[in-house]
Each structure stands twice: as C-alpha cells, then as structure tokens.
Length: 80
Image 1 (cartoon, helix red, strand yellow):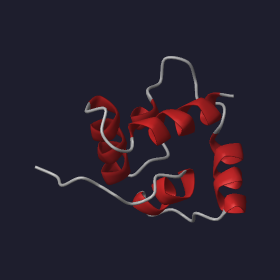
Image 2 (cartoon, one colour):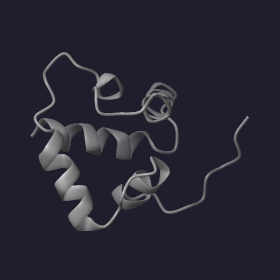
Image 3 (tube, one colour):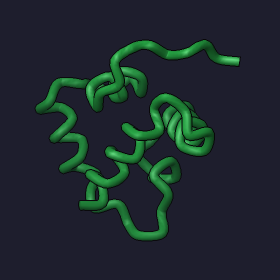
Image 4 (cartoon, one colour):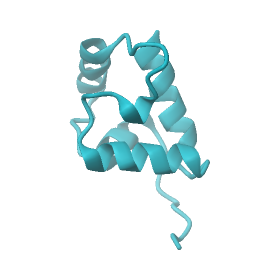
C-alpha cells in the first residue's frame, strides 16, 4: 500500500516520475514528437513508452491515483 504522495503534481513532475527530461521545452518537444496518438490506442499502450513507464501510467490511471489527473492531461495533449 502506497503512502499519500504529497509531492507537487505537475506535468514536469510527471515527466520526472517517468524518467524523462522535464523542462518545459523538453515536454513540448516530447508531445510534438509523439502526437497525434491514434484514436483507439490507450495512452499506456503507445509504442514510445518503456514497459515500466507503461505500467506506471496504466496503474495510475486505472486506480484513479494521485497522478491520474496529470496522466489524463498528458493523454489529451498527445491527442490534440
């Protein structure tokens, strides 16, 4: 059982959690490189994640966990 995550939940922090560069420019570049994510492809099933990243995204979204809102924001931005 996880303890309450009291860290700040921002897109930058989500990218840190995923082990990705997290500057605003790096996040914008990542999104530009990987969008648009095809309809019908779940965010966690996108081919550009490592297995560990995909598992983290799937768990956070499925459990409506601390990061779910940010995972959803990333999902929306990758489909825009």
